Length: 472
Image (tube, rainbow, N blue to C red; front, side):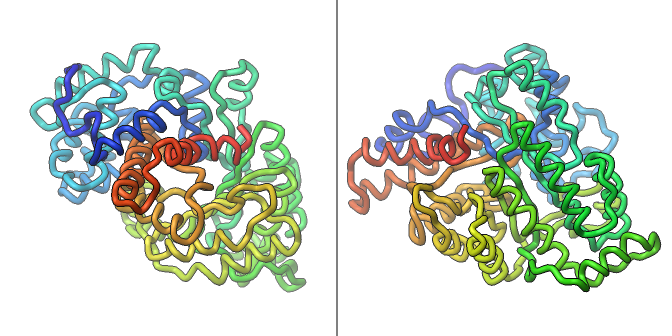
């Protein structure tokens, strides 16, 4: 199956509609390293230098994008997340892929097969067995272990996503052996903000008590425990915090009533309702953001997704099962108030804002321009097109909004936000789209027809801005 000549649309000119676009991509973007500052990869897999047994393990397990597509085609859940064999699941995906035309999965899948395995063919039901056998054989090679894949894609930084209670032992192992690629933890405290689910929240508090060695009976002791974990993460190389929220809390000012209600809530094992949900989240999040500032971290806010819409599927498979979608929540006022509160206190860290709904593009792009700082390039960032917007149209819309409402030249560029080690082709996907968009405007006389000038900006967006922003 390893084919030397191109048999698919993924060739040198893929997504590049002119010679100038190809020139920009090849001369300024193609060979740059990757700083993947936000993803959901396993530090354990990297530390153990795992070789996945099958392409199903590395490519399909946990990939809710592919799961959604297969469900849309009526594929039985057994062949998606159920007890079918790995080969049966791969065959089911191979059969589905030809029907994903115009969905980004079609492009991504072709690129991942070609770039990782040199398999340059349209995957389908007929060649599924051969592709499965070929890929599985290659996956046993050292060159396609987790570390081998990272090296293959020229990755310099992997920013994992980690719960505050994580012991970070695998990050410590990688740091101790001085692994050439930086694998840094990211502090993700979502569970501590989810107080509306009392049972899950109180169970999590027990974990946090164990990790911090602090008994949590009040708001002050909760914040002390979180401060303890922030310090621990900082000691272990953390530079970034991340949060997945519907929207920013409306209130972040504490009160005696809130503090008393939280103490009662924690004391009463049968209490299931907490009156101050939004205020609690706001107070905790504001306190955390001030901790991030003190440690020089970057804070990220992923806003607007409505998760676990299908309660039946959630009950069967848990979260991240492929039943999430865009929300249509108001974002501007709460976001403005939260950032302004930190700015007024002189404690606003570098911030990246991500929206899940394209209708919010201009809102987020303009919000970022409100909070700048002398000597800091693009302090508050309009983040890369995220989740359902992570495709050609979505990327172009994000780039256009940022360009029109702010400065594209300050952008820290793409991140995979993925659970798969094969997703690094998305950086190439983004780079090609960026180069093509700029080339079109150069040829139309909208931008200077100066490849070196524009090329320098491309290099900054694809690599150098992130390197400076995250100080890596």
